[in-house]
Image 1 (cartoon, helix red, strand yellow):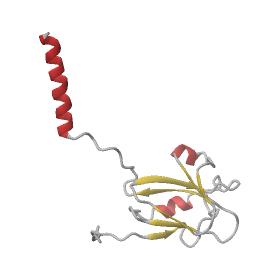
Image 2 (tube, rainbow, N blue to C red):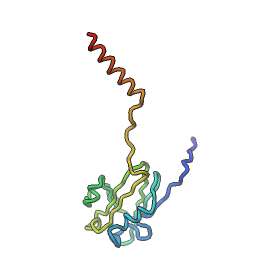
Image 3 (tube, rainbow, N blue to C red):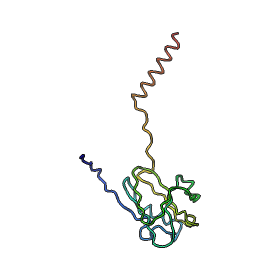
Image 4 (cartoon, rainbow, N blue to C red):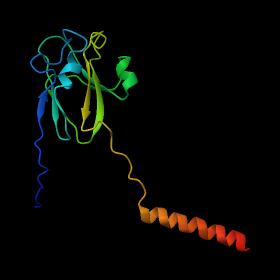
Length: 144
C-alpha cells in the first residue's frame, strides 16, 4: 500500500447554516453571511440539515439560474445529506420547494479560489514543435 502525503491542512465538515440549519432564513442575506465567515477548501464537506418542513438542496449550474431561483438541477431531498467537494469551483445551492428560494433559502459555496480547474496550457515544447512545423511548411511553400 502506498503512503498518502500530508497536504498540511485538515478537511472540515460544516453544517449548512450553523445552528439554524437549511431552512427558510430569518433574512435574505443569512446564508451569504454564513458562508462569508469561512474559507472553504478542497475536501471540505457540507451537511444540509433541517428538522421541520419539506426542503431540498438543489445544485444549479450557473449564477443566472441561482439568481432566478431556477428549480432544475441536482436535487438532494433527504435531510442530513453530506456533500464533499474535490476541486476549486463555485457551487450554487437553493431550495426548490415552493417559494423558499425567493425567501432567501439559497447560497453560494466557493471552494478555494472558486475557479474550476481548466485544461493545462500547451507546454513550451508543444508550442515550439507547432511553430517549427508552421515555418517548415511555409518554407516549402515559398521554395517551390
